[in-house]
Length: 316
Image (cartoon, rainbow, N blue to C red; front, side, top):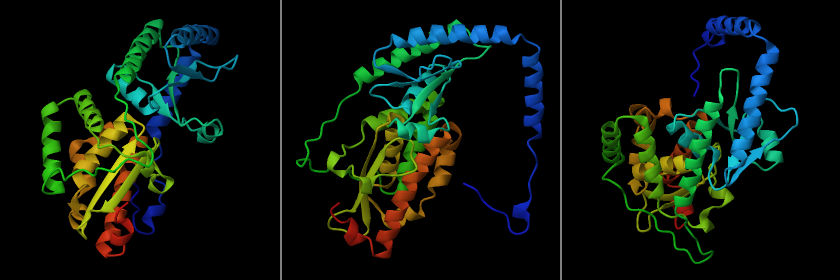
């Protein structure tokens, strides 16, 4: 978020990006010291080699096949979101980009929610592409092991979860202790994903546009209600098409579902995420999605606490 200073200080320009200008100058000097034709041949070789390798992976679709394209391969993998592809590759030591890549209108035009993107430059080698290929084979393997949930339209009864603890603070303490025990972030990512695998099933009937959480790169639905027989306890079901986001959904559900709205509103969720160091280890799009879900939960809790949302959310 952005916090503004008081007038007139908020209109100050601030310190220019001095180090960025110096770094750009050094980079330009370095590139000019090389032969551009050699750079082009090298990147063309990597693009050709990478394209042939990735075309052989089942379920992988290369997006963009222009004749004179640069050293970039954008792709999707059937059955898994680009965010999850990027996370799994990251855990395998392979760095790529995922998301809209600053061209969301084009992706909307071709009905693509996002892509994974591998970029090749003069410092890359065929060994890097081999590592990418090997890691992507693991991605495909993970899809085959993924359990499939089935909803029978019109016949599914929502099963809202019981509270995971006496209060959000109690649940938060348990999760934080687990994070500290796990130590490194690959293990913590795996823990978050496993939480998502245990997320209570959300019937397709609840995945409506009214229950859609906007601001998330992945598709997220959240359906809340006041627990039957109460006036101040909120419970909810939620789901996402991305495994890592489902894990974050499960974390929020453990914190808040089945809790009193006053406790939900009093809980410092941003401070809690800071303690877990989530802000430093989630991409901007994942953070935006996470805070979008938090905003939705707090807005519903505020309605119930004010007394004008209990009836509206009863029985959803």
